[in-house]
Length: 502
Image 1 (cartoon, helix red, strand yellow):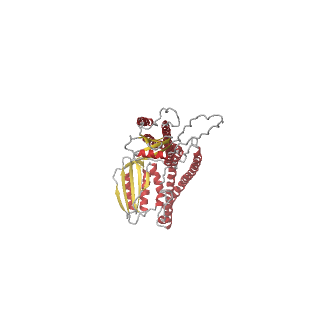
Image 2 (spheres, rainbow, N blue to C red; image 1 turned 135 degrees about the vertical axis):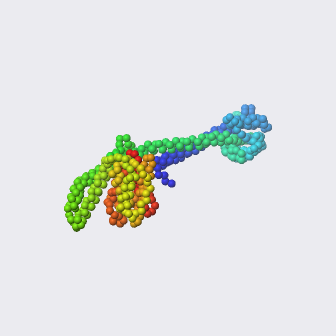
Image 3 (cartoon, one colour; image 1 turned 90 degrees about the vertical axis):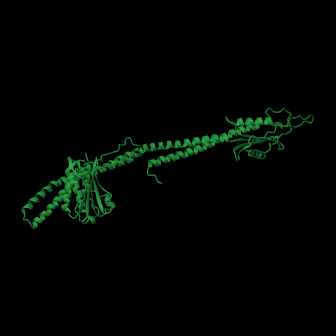
């Protein structure tokens, strides 16, 4: 599954990388600690095995202090085993098993303190059978003189082979076993790894608690660090969101930006500069053109009206002059719309705010609707007294545009519905009419200037595509909006949203 958030991906990847590192470090550390404990246990086992140094019959010396190699010396062996239990333990007694055999394989001593785990004695015996005998010492006789008797030298002591330590498991516990053989005795010791396993379990639990906590800290840290790293992107996004006709003067400062984002921000600032220059030129052109054409069109309209009054009624000249006057009035309307749009682009659309009775305006629109389209069925759902603060003339122009579109794009013998909804903050006026379905591509561009949708559908309908664009600019100048609603097939709905108080 692909995550859409780059910041979240960065935090999760950092946590995954840190997690794998911590898990690997924890596993290696756990193994190193375990091996260190086993090595220390093996060293102690070796020390305890070497305590049992038998007296060799070839050596005419007194018994070595601490030697346990004497047949039938059970109390000494028991004391030896008891001392082992506390030697390998920390604060508690550790289970220990001892097996001692003579050179013929007869049992000198066998632990009987583990009745619940008798299998350990079998493991000790098997280990002794696998342990090799110590090597015989090599001694070269000194050169003999023909006139001297050889001096008596005792044989060198026989040293046992270094014991081998293995880990065996029974049904009850895990044991660490060490065994060695002397010339006249064999001994094997098994130490339970219960204490070591408990310590390692404690360490494992510490790792299992600390590693997720560390991962959480790494994830939070990566989230915060990535947020700081992406700050120029958020700043860039904030400026882009403010890029409107009124906000093209926005620029992102470069002085406090990281080096990696300097080029991106420079390109973006240059793009804003070009857009500002283009919009300024276009807005200035439309405004200047509308303003310059306004006076000639006014003069032309006045001359046509005066000339129309001087010609004979019903003549062909009067008909032509009437057609010319209609086109001049149409051009004057286009110029007024362009002038208003240029003012809206420059943020200079002035509003003459008064208390407007929207119920009264809607009733006036309905009276005009009955005269312009008597074939349409009209349904209304609004109450009296819908008052707001706004520019009455501009709001009338918005309603005229909406009702004009509802008539022009309606179906034969269609219908129009008007309903309102007022809250303490806003007033919503929705105008719905029967119509052909609007394609999705047209819905996205329906408020664009000079856009009229499918030419095959609109070529017989008057208009130049400025009405909805101007109506939305007027609504936004009132801090409201004009939107195309999502409706079922066969109808079109526009909602005018206006604040009750500006």
